[in-house]
Length: 622
Figure 1 (cartoon, one colour):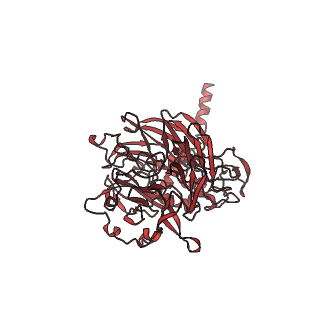
Figure 2 (spheres, rainbow, N blue to C red):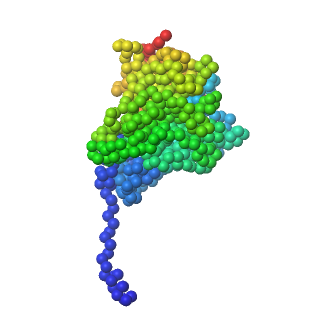
Figure 3 (tube, rainbow, N blue to C red):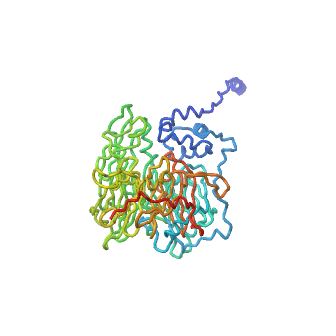
């Protein structure tokens, strides 16, 4: 019997050789439905020549993990090679995470008495302003010049707000790398690799003895990380949402031993695929223990569980309710014990009562104390303006959510919450009750317009960036992009710096400003979608300085990189007299990859010719 078995085994046909998947075929079957659309087609060119491991990361545990879940390992590798044009067995596939030389010993010491700008906002009020005496004067702004530049590996957009503490600069990046850099020289103190893109700011907390610190951040797959701020060593990590489309976009707010994490979604973009059953994800705020990441409470922005509500024209199930993502950074009132966030629109019907709303939650429990809904019935996703439209809700909503971070201000001894909406309307609410104090339309709203990412406040004014600004009143109103200053007291316009002035005859420019500005005693720093950074006089809007980042730079590693558009939550940031600007926004087809550090030049401004241009389009309002 043994001999017979041996003969049978030897005579059995050899198994067919495994055929390697064809990357083009995998792409056509799984990726082309979205990546051939205008909104995502530029990603093809942005990824050419990039290490294919970046794409495998995105498909395995990044923002493309829903699409990658149906692919085996060889298929992910094949499509990554096809998408990047780089083979895994080539030298070009090696991944190098260095962005600057390692710091020498004398640049590794952290001074925790220096907490120059340790989060998305200087404080948990998220005012995006610097205290008096900490730099940013008109004179200093007019003399800013490039000090150093770094470029991030595998990146075509920079969306993590740089933060500063301990003499270091902390920043995340497109491929999930997080860095601690020396503020003065740009050398690298440490590097950490998260699972996927880190869009949040790095939030730094210092212990009571000023002897050490922690750094907290989150990635686009809804993972939260805590690392030692001096070494980058991982202390703990936690997934706060298992949904395959869950993401974290707004930064983490740290307060009194707790972390408040805003949860958003990639599902509004995934809806571009007609075969995707849209939509089932709910926005939320999650509170964690800062010491070990243990969950304390979770408050969803949609109270009902999703169910099938119908079928699309191609037979795909339609689920709802969904959406109401929290895209922004939570704001804290210590006086009232409340946490404030803005909620987004629903991604499918039925629309719910907390979408397009400002929400106040108890810090201790997450209980919703009050809500202010500015728009009801708003169900919208990206398929409404891109692709086949099969996933677009009917009737379609206006997409006027509260995506921008709220500001908590003092007015006549009371706290006032100011919230900007994508409708272009600014709302001032009583922080304790949610009662509307005033509202003012300052911008033309819409899916790609209005007040999108964030604002700043200083000296009784709120500084609002816009892609389309409404100047004047009535029939004579001229919608123009730019920056507007509004009185906190009553919402009246103080000044407006409009597109023609900001552009200064730059071809193809309309002055669209979408990144959140930063205010000092004397100037407002604002960055435009076309890559130009401005310093505007805080009281009049007059232009003090301008620098075009859409150009080539030599990095600290001696390599060449380019800036691009500036948008998203990464606005200009000032610390210890230095201005830090992240340039590059591939999502708006304005890719770039340059983190630029500016410092005042003793002899004069960096661009004297540009700075001397007359500000003849300034609108001053009494």
